[in-house]
Image (cartoon, rainbow, N blue to C red):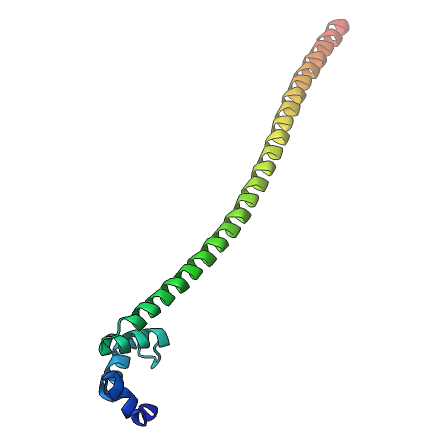
Length: 135
């Protein structure tokens, strides 16, 4: 307000008073931080003074800034998705490797069970033969 007090003539030229600007600032300061973006303030000032050109320029600027943010988000998302895709591919390869190892282990266990059964049968037959020879 101090700096605006010395600019009363400039304010009169655009058709505004200090109290209107203070009310505008208060209205735009939605988080009570005492801060308002310059663009938002200009949109408000020029809306109050009836000028649509500056308001349109500020909205165009805000739209461009939004587009830049959206493009940055798009790029970041693609990078993160690429990283996630690489991680999923790695998990898939490890899963396939483990599946092969589990299948190999299952086959080895089945072979060992068969070998053990055969050995049990061989020892049983040997025991029967020894028992018969001893009788």
